[in-house]
Length: 305
Image (tube, rainbow, N blue to C red; front, side):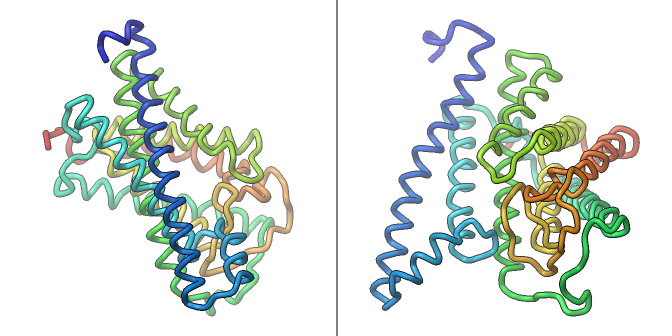
């Protein structure tokens, strides 16, 4: 591979593209096999085609069991692709991409979990008190069902998957040829573009995804591990969707509470969810300020695994 790659600036992009295309091909095959197997099993168990059609048409609702399995397959595929290329091709320890010992990183994980939850609650409260959203169901009568568990499983895998690839892997690989600031910016661009096919994307959606990636990258750089940004990503999505009832990056979510958007505008984010609105822009900027001024990393040592 060294003989093929001549341009130093091109080398990290070939690595990133190779990892991504391996993931896409592998997961596409596995997902297709799963979908066909799922349909066959349903037919054997007596399900009619209308039931199968309903499941397939609603497979983009995060929280249902079918969508959860698909998400776990897809996320696991990218996680394995990253680990394979880093350990086997680059022959480097996974601690170099931020997967440090959880015994030393758990405090950062807990801080990230709390930080993500509080950040999204702030977004919710601002939208509520400005009367841009309303509760559809009674606060004392939440929707408690299995979707809260399947949603959590989904967002755990999504958090680990996206942070490992976009922060841990892309930033570290890009650092081999660029300075860290350029690497962070490029990784944020990659993260934003990965959401391009989500429903109801807008200019503000791209901006907020970019800023979210900058914030997560700052956590990664400052803590010297990936745990804080993983924690933040998990609860940011989980509270946004499964708890508070917003759409998450354009995806519909089965949730504990349901909210009604009184205004479909740049404040609420409309059909993309609050990540398409300027309240999230404000909260993410506050988050960057918090990590810069307040957050103190627990352990700057990155050990080898």
